Image (cartoon, one colour):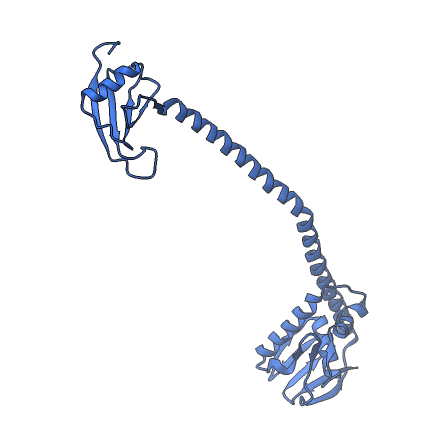
Length: 268
């Protein structure tokens, strides 16, 4: 014998078959969900704690699952109720305690006879569903453990990559400094009569006197805070002079005037 539970004279719940029926529409529910709903109905008007539902749906069968599994099956039950156009408030959440079926819900129970072969197949199906719940729970725990195991390795890899990137950056910076050093200007110290700052590059081989005379000869202003750059290249036959208001390497606009001088001899 099995029972058929009539809820509010419209919804039929058959725990043995794990089905909900309304107006000829049948909605299948899981074995653990069916066990939880049966306990909620038995304790109508009372709070069924998480522990009670957990024990009734899984632990009494020797099954160990995560707490999230209970909430998942309650959510599936409510989904089935919505499909049948039944107020999901039939199963009410009691915050931090559990769930309950409200006192005002009308419940009646009828006894029905089941085919023994059906009972056997249903028991097998229930076992399979419970095993599935365990497999899902174990799988999630296994994944979580793998993540925890891999986490330190992952962190080590991140630090290793950061370290490598830092080393590469240092090497590139060093090469950049060397490159700029080979092509950079250096400060040309002149006597006090030369008020401006004069910079020449490494390829200028003129004596200091010739450079100062060159600037004076072509009436290049050498006022205080004026910056003059004298540059040439290895095989060039001329010298370039730039008279600037600001450092050419600064972010400010340089405001330079340019002059070009053809070399006449090595001693010029």
